[in-house]
Image (cartoon, rainbow, N blue to C red; front, side, top):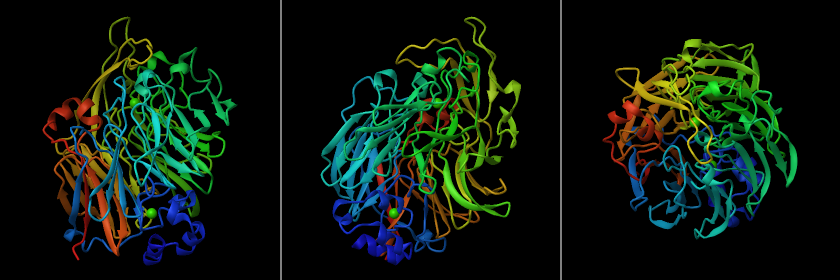
Amino acid sequence: MKRRFSHFLAGLAAATALVAAPAQADHHGPTSSDLMNDAASAGDVLSYGMGPWQQRFSGLDALNSDNVSKLVPVFAASLGGEKQRGQEAQPLVYDGTIYVTGSYSRLFAFDARTGEKKWEYTARLPDGIMPCCDVVNRGAAIHGEKIIFATLDARLIALNRETGKVIWNKKTADYQEGYSATAAPLIVKDMVITGNSGGEFGVVGAVQARNVDTGELVWERPVIEGHMGTLNGAPNGMTGKLNATWEGDLWKTGGGATWLGGTYDPGTNLLYFGTGNPAPWNSHLRPGDNLYTSSTLAIDADTGVIKWHYQTTPHDGWDFDGVNEFIPFDATMNGKPMKLGAKADRNGYFYVLDRTNGKLLGAHKFVMQTTWADGINLKTGRPNYIGEGRPGAPNGAEKGKVVFSSPSFLGGKNWMPMAYSQDTGLFYIPSNDWGMDIWNEPIAYKKGAAYLGAGFTIKPIADDHIGALRAMDPKTGKIVWEYKNAAPLWGGVLTTKGNLVFTGTPEGYLKAFDAKTGTELWKFQTGSGVVGSPVTWEQDGEQYVAVMSGWGGAVPLWGGEVAKTFKDISQGGMLWVFKLPK
Ligand SMILES: [Ca+2]
Ligand SMILES: [Ca+2]
């Protein structure tokens, strides 16, 4: 009853919550309808992104811009061992327990009041795993008595959330072909929905829906045209049209990894998944738009059928990928209330679409520089490409013409999720200003080997910053405020009704900003770089904030000159929890 009582305390959607949660829910754990209600239930954090829209907005305001300067730690809990590296997870909070995934495919349960460890699960990983961009994991999903997470060898594992014992353990793809998995699963209608990683190895991006109780496959939708989908074990139609935008057999190793997972809109019953780069990176080897890479796909949650697509970077030649999260929001545009969705793409543009049909309504640059395109044509939906911005074709064994490109392939924004405030109507985008020298090389596909056909060196483009947290007005495309950070930002964002925006920095700080003005109001040094996503909830009548600390991710591995500048940041692996003093 405690959890439901907190609905009343928060004064949020109390009636809906009582109807949605059956009497036995407290005993067995959250139901699918509890998960749909996660944004309104202030006493827990049940899902990645805090609700199916993943706006990362909390209606709590006990902690606010007037008192956040007094915020202090309650406890810190170590993930221990020698396994550190990037800690990109978002914590979940339910029934007095904080669940957090760690690097190297680990899952921990901590007492939410004391920080004491309840249990720990470490997946046994084979030697040959091929994660491109650090041994990270971004979070788990709760359903009933289960907690579910993906592992670096491309498996999904469901554990009993009280004991940490395995309930089911399923292979989703073959890690020896280059598949891996790092995203938090999404639970919709008693199905666990996941994407896959491995776009640098010529895998085929796909979305899978599995029965949450058994782990059995319900449907699968490959995202590269020519491949067949399945539903309940039977063929369910080809994705796109064979060879329409791919030549020959290239679609068989076409990439498009759906490595970040997706969002869900109960109103339209659509899943929104971003798809990654076409493979190989060398675009001269694969003429055409290469659908559906570097796109947002709207997928029917019941059948896995693609309802619409919008491709942000047709014929991607820079690993701009396009996997970034698509966040549903409702707003009035041109005098009309509309069902919208927004995406801050790695290519440096912020897109606003009609989420019912994929129609492009706005596209705005959110970074300092885009050398590859001079705007997006709102009529055709296509970028105005700058010809000299594309790296040249190799000449025989010689590498092609080197071009300077901005953003770098690590993106105007990478995996780290933005937040949307229903109060300010602004998106808070964790972005980066940087470029790269990039060139193409010959390459042939070889199973389980890197399939790039390109080389690169990442470089700064500004004297005073790489990272920039930007408040974007989705109606006008105006940057309302920005906070500049020396190191590249690589952590998620949280915003609250208390007029607050939280995010972490590689320099080790968790910071709080005024949501309207961007004034920095509070910071705390966590001892290692913060690349996780903060959350907030209400517990025992007080508002808590939690975040993971632990520097890593793609920047230290692939960041070139930028990585050298920040090589002295200490590693870590710590859950930090904060509240106001009594
Ligand atoms: Ca909640
Ligand atoms: Ca990629």
